[in-house]
Amino acid sequence: MSGGIDYGRLMHRAMRGLIQEVLEDVDKNGLPGDHHFFITFDTGHPDAELADWLSDRYPGDMTVVMQHWYEDLDVTDDGFTVTLNFGDAPERLYIPYDAIKTFIDPSVEFGLRFESQDDEDEDDLPPEGPDGGDSPTPDQAPHQDADVVSLDHFRK
Image 1: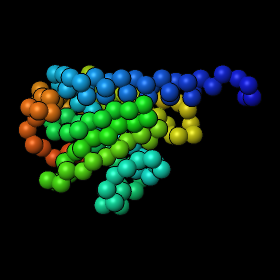
Image 2: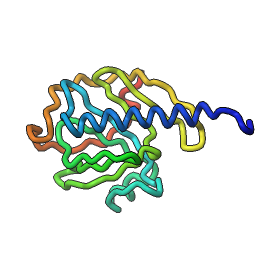
Image 3: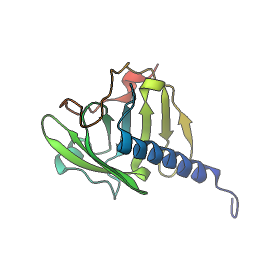
C-alpha cells in the first residue's frame, strides 16, 4: 500500500520504546520486586555485539535472563549494553532494540513478540513462567550465572 499508514512499523517502534523506558527505569532503580526479563534477540543482527564464542554457540538467536546478577546496564536510544555471567565468565553484550525478538517479564505474565524484522506484527504473550524471588538491585545481587533458556518451557 503506497502512501498509506504503516501501523505495523509504528507499533513496533512504540513497543521498542516501551522496552527502552522499562530498561531505563531498571538502570536507575534496579529490578523491583519479582520482576525479571527473558530477552530473546537475533545474534546475527549486524549491530549486535557479543563474544565470538556466544555467537558461535547461538548462531540464530539467544535468550538471556536479567534477574539476580547483571552489571553495567547502559540504555541508549538504539539499544542497551549489559554484562551478564556465563559460567563464571562475565560477558558484555550490546543488544539493539531492532534485534529483539521477544521481551518477557514472567513475574507479571507480560510479553512482547516481534515476529520478524520484515513482518511488522507482534503479539502479547501471557507466558506461564516461574515465580521468581526478590530481584535485588545490582549492588545487592548475589553472583549468579546468566541463563540461556528456551521459551518453549514457558508456553502452555
